[in-house]
Amino acid sequence: MIHYQLRCTSTGEEHAFDGWYKDSGAFEALSKAGLVDCPVCGGTKVERALMAPAIPKKGRPARNAVVPAPAPEAPPAAAPAEAPQAAAGPMPAQLRAMLQKLRAEVEKNCDYVGKDFAEEARRIHRGEADARGIFGEASDAEAEALKDEGIEVGRIPWVPRADG
Image (cartoon, rainbow, N blue to C red):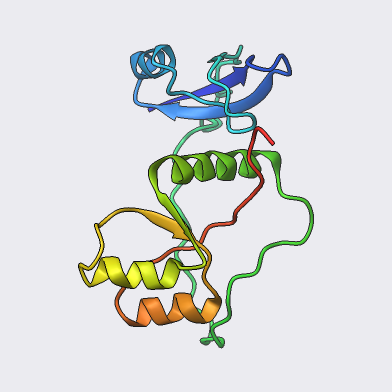
C-alpha cells in the first residue's frame, strides 16, 4: 500500500486530503479514469501533492512503522442502549460533500415514492410490485415496523443538493 498526499484543483481552492492505493500504478489508473474525487467538493481534478519522505533517524522507528496495539481492556459494564447522537455544531464540509454525492446517487438510481414509502416497501417485499430501489419518507415507527417484518430499510441524512 502507498500513501499519497493529494490536492484537488477542480475549483481553484486546492483542497488537500490523503489517500491509500495499492501502488502508484493503481493511483494513476484511477486518476486517469476520473475515479479519484475530492471529499470536499467532489471534483476529479486530483493530483499528488509534494510530500517529504519518511526517513527515520538512527535508533528511532520509522514514522509509519507498525506498532503492536495494546492489549484490549475488559469491556465496561453494559450500559443501557441508546440511539447514537450526532455531535453538535456545523457539519464538516467533507462529510457534507459525501452525503451530497450519496443523495445524487440515490436520486439517480432509485424511485421516489414520497410518504407511501412504508407501503411500497411492503408491496415490493410481498412481490406485489417490481423489485427496485426506492426512497421516500417514513416515521420512526414505520421504519421500525418494516424492520420487524424483515424488510431491510436504511436511513441517511438528507442534505441539500450540491448544486443548490
